[in-house]
Image (cartoon, rainbow, N blue to C red; front, side, top):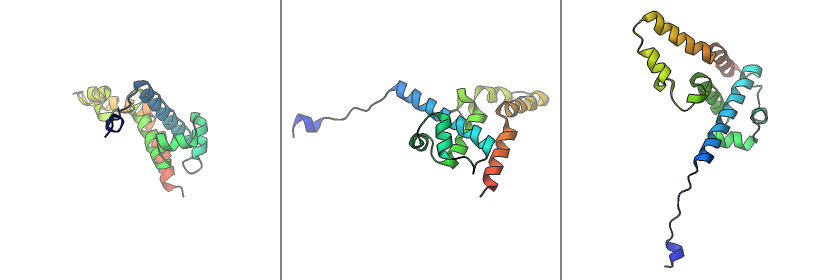
Length: 134
């Protein structure tokens, strides 16, 4: 066995590449959410989402997935916010602060604020339309 055949491949890790890939995923999810809300789930094509996010159709699929995954990603982005896109809502600092509130009125006001901020009414309407559309 030669030295060449005994070499072990090094793993490749680039923080910049990971950061750019995450930015691309967020741009795609944001574009999908915007278009689904404006045009409806069934009427929005992958090509339109790709164009709105300034990426290729293949990048949409490789970064996020098909339309069901795009709907999920758009929903999560809207609820969690771009700064916390990878942190579940219940684990975010704002949710922990709200949950710790002893005053019932302040607790409900905190959760209502999150719902308004995320525009959950629009999101739920978008999801209901997506489920009902052929």
